[in-house]
Image (cartoon, helix red, strand yellow):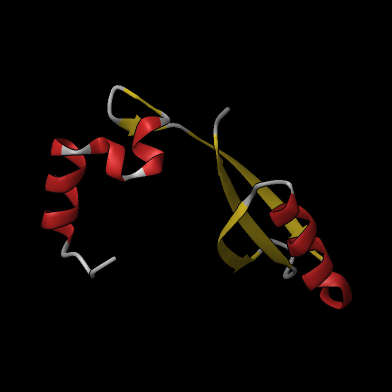
Length: 79
């Protein structure tokens, strides 16, 4: 697949949604997502993220939480 600019990608999605798998799973042209926040424990961070990934969740961002620990923001496409 060749690289696309944002405008090209949006245009192609609008004119040929079958070429993008997620475009088929949308309602009204927009993908519906569900989100979760996950506290990360320092010595098992990889295992926590691997488990959530196995369950279909995608890591969006990791930030420092209000008490100083790490918090992962996850998302996945709604079923």
